[in-house]
Image (cartoon, rainbow, N blue to C red):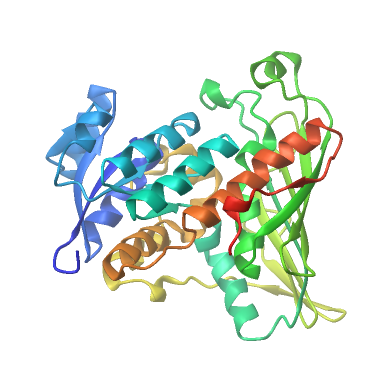
Length: 371
């Protein structure tokens, strides 16, 4: 695979279309094919970006021997089945979050990776955002000192999104707040305890049987004295969009801004300092550096809602593409790999189970833990 570019197929062209020109410009990738059930959308996107190979049938795409890897951006209930199909069809997989909707599905993906020897990466945006890369740099340089506690939140009003989101348990979409606390500490979650709070509209509850407006989970890290707290809300909670994490260190503490587009804060002892987060495009191949500071479409009105609400996902998209492609070219594990993705995703799944059982402590399954 070192001697040729990676032929990538993008599946799902809502959010997925954001990645097309990044793959087109990456020096080690070839944006080979796109897949979308809707013929009109398929050809609109294909024509706009000059992509010749187009599929409306996912199984047909998987039979194409020229496809090396698929990047899945479909509704969350399809992620596990499509990932498993692709792996057993001989394709590497990058998949938007979450990895799956059940613990069993996560286990099946991890097993598929073991059996096929192929690569799986969950495309978690926050651990490649400029905010995370900034804090990671501070930590690795020793400026934060010893990590003492981590906190993260993801609060978002999902009214107006596609119907499958309505009433979704908050922790079933928790990777944006679970991912950064585990990734910074380079740790696995060992067990969780979660409480639900408040109540959403009755017509939203029936779909998933989840009543809570907010779910708040404590995570105990394996082989560590660290713990973290993560909070999620999706409906009936008045809050500006916030995807955030705070890191409490012995020397310095980083706290995410309370209001979008305002500076975050670093505390040194009793002294707070507002900070401007730098961009980290310099970590990328020059051909894709420009994609950290803007969407891929010509106008904001054409961008996917998740990109607009999430402030461009912290410039993470080209970093995600580069991590996936680089892992394939260099035959190494990406971050997060299949096991790590399962640990992150299962935290949310089991946290909701804990909330429904009054905060019961639940262990993460062994297949999600490092040996």
